[in-house]
Image (tube, rainbow, N blue to C red; front, side, top):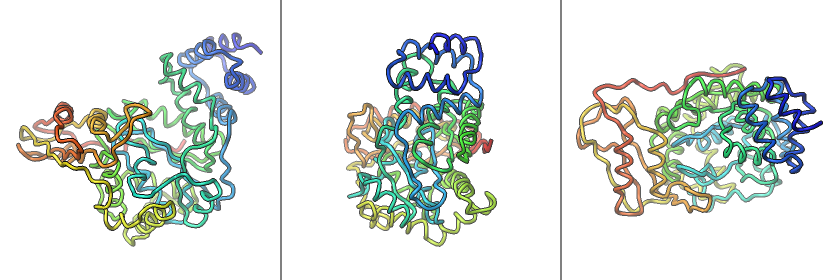
Amino acid sequence: MRMVDLIAKKRDGKELKTEEINFIIEGYTKDEIPDYQMSALAMAIFFQDMTERERADLTMAMVNSGDTIDLSAIEGVKVDKHSTGGVGDTTTLVLAPLVAALDIPVAKMSGRGLGHTGGTIDKLEAIAGFHVEISNEEFVKLVNKDKIAVIGQSGNLTPADKKLYALRDVTATVDAIPLIASSIMSKKIAAGSDAIVLDVKTGAGAFMKSVEDAKELAHAMVSIGNNVGRKTMAVISDMSQPLGFAIGNALEVKEAIDTLQGKGPKDLEELCLALGRQMVFLANKASSLEEAEKMLQEVISNGKALNKFKDFIANQGGDSSVVDHPEKLPQAKYQIEVPAKEDGVVAEIVADEIGTAAMLLGAGRATKDSVIDLAVGLMLNKKVGDSVKVGESLVTIHSNRENVDDVMTKIYENIRISDHAESPILIYDIVTE
């Protein structure tokens, strides 16, 4: 088998066999296939696409290129959730205790964020004492005992994907659906879950800007998951404006607590219920999505979800009293209002640019070495469709520096007020095949 022949085969629109895909990924992982040949293949895939079988084979070849996590010692159906990312995306902090409160194991492997705000781990570390440096044995023990634990990403998972991802970045092949889908799904499958729920974002703050592209990616990932024996479903949700009100680590923890008490932003609660009902259904705890949603609403109203969050925090060394006393979370020195300059209706809040405004305060990482300020961020006081009067606060800036002119400028440039606005759609579609 020669790589040049396989590049030509894909260039001409022919289907690669399973053993050919395995040969490519194994050779590339071992540095036996050079970057320039892999670049050529990635471009051929970009133009010629892959069949469902090829996509599934590519995913599993990347899974098998490194370590995999064995969660078999955890009792029950392990359901994982993956979001394609966004601004103010606090869903994991709400979903994990919410689903665990129904005795469904949530064994979550999370990373740190590079971008607008921190990742799930950074947000959790806004709680004093909370840590994710636990052994695999402790991780399994906690999930079996209380159905929930979060551990940092470790081991040599999907090394082929890491290499290929870096190559795609510099060869204009990032947005090839088969390559995106296999990249995401290989990491989720290597992490050991039995079933996977995907939150595929669309809009200004998302990787997939159009609903059509988001649907195509969702169908691709659901197909891969189901083809390799992982029950998989997806929600296509809006990220044209930030989710919820809070953008910033401690602020998002407070918002998660509010949501678990049934007092959170309506859009965040709606999305968590949409994702949560799929997780409950895939875990075989409910016979329909409607029944699953009723069960989730019940554990919010009876306080079980909130108590599960307290157990989770305490189990991993955190101060669980922050749930009842969120003022114990890191607090910024200054709270500065951004007043509206005109009457009207909020017509647009450009999610990624507002996220950048939060990053300017120190809420996120511009580079891998950046240090996050867990206290800072933005609280939106208006969302798209809300009416506003001159002088009313659009946003509250939580800052540890007094001069925030750069942040204010960014906010004003990216919140548009008009005389009318369309009410935004939060959930565009549910994908099950």
